[in-house]
Length: 120
Image (cartoon, rainbow, N blue to C red; front, side, top):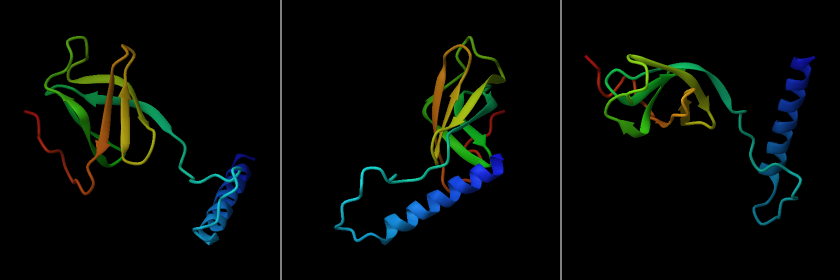
């Protein structure tokens, strides 16, 4: 049943994209049509490496760097890892949150094949 619903939603999204791309640029879109289709936000348990600071993360094969890096882990964080949740709100963005209320926002490093700095 879930597969059927997912396929129906995917077909509806493709039909909407087809309609939107077929419209002349000067035509006003009706308000009830979605303008863009994005994958749903995803969250999952994540261990953030903190030993040498909070600067980078490898998430599902993509290298990310912190928008505001931390030189070292905050005193109340785990070392070498902090348990939490990583959320992918949209392509190229990742947000780490822990149970203490900390949040670290990351952006993707397009084309990166490794970390910028290896911790010793």
